Length: 57
Image 1 (cartoon, rainbow, N blue to C red):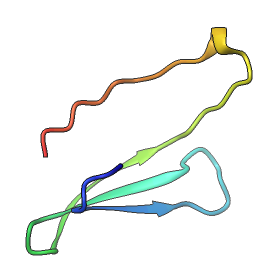
Image 2 (spheres, helix red, strand yellow):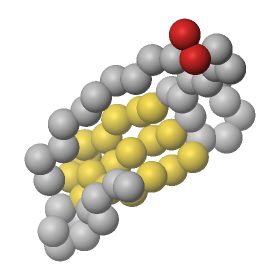
Image 3 (tube, rainbow, N blue to C red):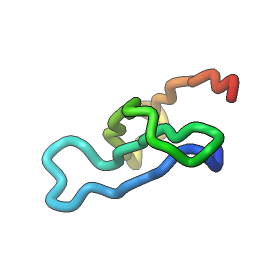
Image 4 (cartoon, one colour):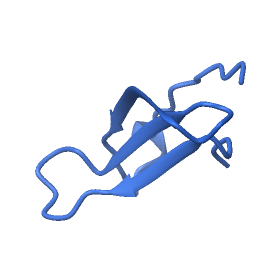
């Protein structure tokens, strides 16, 4: 579900960061911009949380 210009990398040996997302421009060159994702899970629906994230492009 990520835009084509975003590269997703799974992180081995999980110590908090699960995914690394890097942005590339329209020509496929790295922009140097990235963010990290930490995934959380629960079996208790009352404790479930989500964070909306607006994506323009």
